[in-house]
Length: 136
Image (cartoon, rainbow, N blue to C red; front, side, top):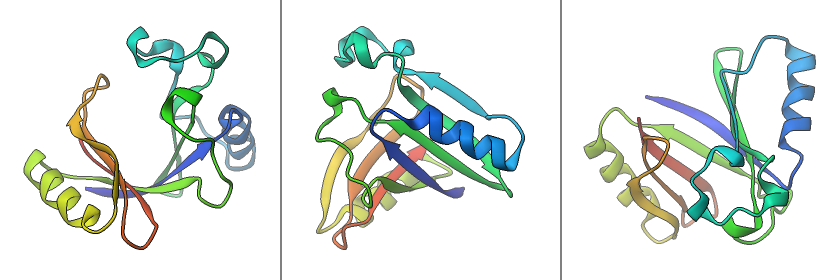
């Protein structure tokens, strides 16, 4: 299990993470673009070069991020462009934690199997904090 920070950007995720890498050194643990997604996800041609997911370890913690294409909802608002990402140890734990953390809040992506192989859900808790809960 791991607790990490996930940042969302309005098209400049690559620039931001390249800057962080220039500061801290090292390499990205993973890096993918929207071009790698299934076509039925509704990503425009202009946004396909955007960052779908990047993971970069700094000091033993993964800093993760992505751009948010227009097909995924309202534009990013600076100050609310982050989520806490929790990696569970089982599907059952994922379901239990997601049900509890989303109580009284708003589910933004229901729990389900994803094209990247995770069991994943996202929500905003009743205090306005964005969460991602997954099991790989």
